[in-house]
Image (cartoon, rainbow, N blue to C red; front, side, top):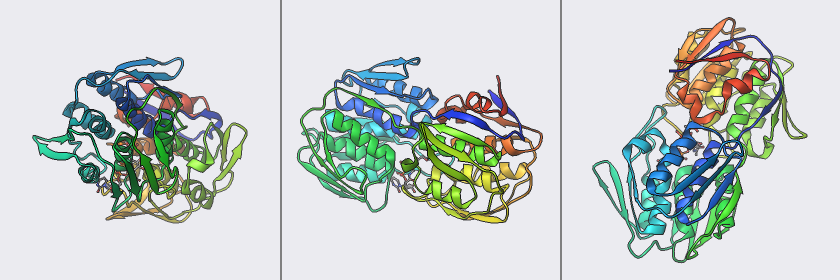
Length: 419
Ligand SMILES: CC(=O)N[C@H]1[C@@H](OP(=O)(O)OP(=O)(O)OC[C@H]2O[C@@H](n3ccc(=O)[nH]c3=O)[C@H](O)[C@@H]2O)O[C@H](CO)[C@@H](O)[C@@H]1O
Ligand SMILES: C=C(OP(=O)(O)O)C(=O)O
């Protein structure tokens, strides 16, 4: 297994290009099941999760062409196999996003239940209830969701009792081919959902209310081909903003968008980080000390759960204390004991962690069990005295394109050690 070695203490300086967003790319790829295509996605990131999704769609029978140099993925052909197997779904929870499109287009699907993961239980009951409201029959058999809607899905008014990104995406995709006009109330408003709406509309879908919590979808009989650019990854941008801040550096995040970062920008500014729009992206610098700043994770435009671990790493070297409350996932503090091994002072109880800043972290061998926890250890390593070895780099490869090359290019002393 590959590892990453970091020798900390260098302030970052230069430009970091931000890749296409993982959490936009995966649902966008699933939309290819709604059409014979071709659907071409540009600005596609080179990530393990994109490869997993490409593999899943290929096993459904789609033709998948990936041009790494041009950063495009082209998907075409209808699904011939309506089953998403456990081995692929278990690897990547976004696989469950094939459910809505398959039932909407083919009237049936058999998709493994994703189960939980290192950050929480990850239920899909909201997805299933909404599909039932749209006329599907759902059975859970041998760990699989079996969905049937032989006459096609019917439009419905879906009121989500809580905001769910995945359920909004699944039902939005399903509603594009349902008979009649659906309404999705209390829809998630993440930029990735607006991007999904934009792509579906390019394919011929009729959707109103983009960027709001009420989406209205008028079903159409068929969707066609489209070329769609994937939005820049706001979580990658936020992560590198924290990298600049933790090292006392100054970077330009190439292509990053301020309006996609929601509360993350306000919180970074409160903590003493300068974030400003600049030609070609966002300029992030930190010239003075960091201030302990409280944060609560919330759906967009609140502070993203996917930024919680990285912000915690930053708070480990801030002056004063910060209370970090995680409201989305019940177990998203796996980075805490690893950061503590690097000298961080953190106590947590239930959903909240109190971080008391220390002047300097110390390098150590560390490992984490999920993507954002792993990158928080990379950030800590950039600021720590001495050498940090981050194990289980495959978590990082799920969501960060060439993380060590991007950081080395702006002055970090970081390299990948092949396993
Ligand atoms: C609202 C939110 O911040 N969602 C995050 C969530 O999306 P993801 O789509 O994975 O999760 P959801 O947005 O669906 O989950 C939000 C909350 O709803 C609950 N839930 C969800 C579906 C369901 O059927 N039943 C149910 O109870 C979840 O347990 C969770 O507490 O993880 C992704 C990966 O980290 C992030 O990119 C998303 O920003
Ligand atoms: C946890 C994440 O992804 P997933 O939902 O695929 O597990 C993430 O993007 O931080």
